[in-house]
Length: 358
Image 1 (cartoon, one colour):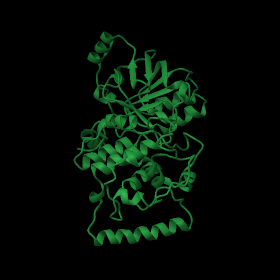
Image 2: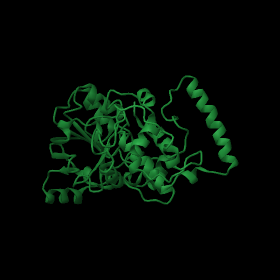
Image 3: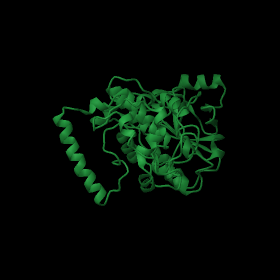
Image 4: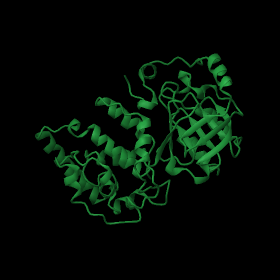
């Protein structure tokens, strides 16, 4: 399936940092064995030529890789990883940039759990290299790969061998890429959703909030069967600082799907989700609850509006009431943390910038 690990493997290949087909070759078999040997030889060659990762990781190659991932409906976690990577090389990529990229990058493919196609079929259809060939008019072809070739030189040798799984640029599955970044009074600094995995009937939704202060509280409610169709589940204090660590609500999202509520109940959190999550699951809400973002003052029975078309996430409560609640909000007492998590909470950035350590 196209979870976070496989998405990132495709990104690494798209950036020119791994050999062709490395991202989607099956774990077992002679193809993987041969690829491993060739990778070893290539590493030795790169060392001899004094070519390092930073010769290949550039703002242009990051931008290309983001477009590729958006074109196949990749994991929302790529936003954290690529924003943090951009920061490491002096860039300032943030999640709103992904929305702009998504609006201009069509969806050419998508895979389990968002469609019936799996990664082995993607591999047989030519994988990342064929997708990049079809997407090439939107890519910067001057970037380099581990062979020392430009992307333009590399793609001239690639032949498109399949149509249905990887669509043409002029015949996409959707005119927009897989991820949308929402704004509005509930997420003034943005929130993230994998729009390619949302049922068309849930692209616009209004529902009453049911608030949970942690993932554990939500799991308990799910297992006790207290969730109703139409509700909007709000799970807070799971952001980078609030968690701390921005936990992944993948199990809760999977339980929701298993209960048959994936197309009638929405989830909103300042935490994140698995790359394989589907349905109206909105994460990365910024500012997070621990920093006093509006998600911290949502109450049970408040009405919430989700509008993917207009990129809106709104708390439908009078503005004066919102201001009143924010004024009286107090940061909750969170158990004393020791060691790394305590350091992390003090140093971590907003999810908007990739939750990097400063």
